[in-house]
Image (tube, rainbow, N blue to C red; front, side, top):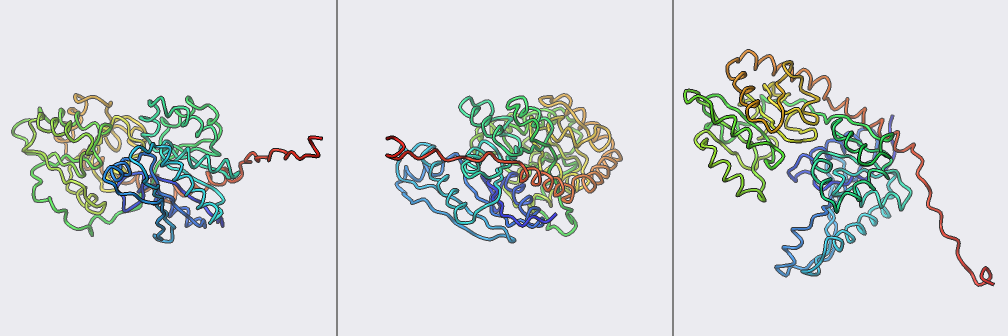
Amino acid sequence: MIFQKKVCLTAQEFPPDVGGVGESAKRIALLLKDLGFEVHVAIFRSVFRKERKLAESGKWKRSHRMTTEQNGIFVHRLYPAIRSTIARDQDYLMDVYGQLKNLHQQYQFDILHAFFINETGFVTTMLAKENNLPVINSVRGADLHKHIFDCQQQKQIAWTLENSSWATFVSQDLMKRARLFAPGVTHKSSAFWNSIAPVDFDNLPTPSLVNRLKGLVIGSVGNFRDKKGVEYLLDACQDFSSDLEFTLLFVGDFVAKEAEYWEQELKNSGLSSHIVITGQVSREEALAYLPHMDIFTIPSLNDGCPNALLEAMLAERAIVGTNVDAIGEILGNGVNGLLINPYSSTELEAALTLLIQQPLLRQRFGKAAKQLALKKLSPNVEQLNWELVYLKALQSPEPQLTPEPQLSLANIA
């Protein structure tokens, strides 16, 4: 089915911004474009650290919007005004909402779609309800795993879910939690995985630090922070025999707000001579590191449906992952990888040791993982899921807001 309608996606990041939500938003925007939509993406945040820093340095700005076109997608970056050092979040957010409303007045969208519910969902859903538009909210991971524990956000998250025309989730675990938290979403929600387009790893450039990789390479890719379970990976590698030459490769960097913690953990691990950290790299270079890994690890405590997992599957890597979210749904333990419980260095060490000792098993898991990625995680499968979601959301009757009767002097008399 070809949709000849206008959709506005809202997200807190979009390439060239670094982040999994942005990558997913771009992928889905292109899938919707291929379905016939005129696709707009509005980019804004609901956390205003950058604006506060600018205010403190006396750099005042009017609210403004920057619009560009990327691959036939209209990308609108919304920036709130910076007027005061004591401005609160609602001051900035009200400004962003006004710009989003102005976008709708200019383009007359047929449907709205928010990614990452606690950052963009509430504002997007409020605009939709005020204009009798259908709205889809997509939960990606941390929005329900982490932010639901913020008491100040709980009512807002529940209201957003309840008022969605449809809600989507990247794992069954996330959907189950949402249905418990906001029962009204039960009959208007679905869960399906991210997709990954085939990658020609042979034509990628040689990564810059490849000459530092020694022996067997145990690797991970991401924006490393609290949920990634890196502590357990460090613990698991501490007891490896001194006879084993290996490199622990982190493709990406550790988040700035946790920098001191991770500096301490890395120092205390005693693995400094084995660790290589690339720092922030492009997606192309991150992909180029994957064929140089013997084992890919993703010991997350929670993680939605991480793109890094799907990329490692395409690269035919032997994978050790935790039984959480889509990682536990996609990987079959002993079939195309090994699954362990989160928070367990002992289980992680045992899984790594097994794969270190059995190179043929690594090869078998890698081939099985790639076949699954090509068959069940292809863009065509995800596009079909989005087509069904949009059909349901657009057919969902939105309650019409009826104006209050106007009083006149004649009525009063």
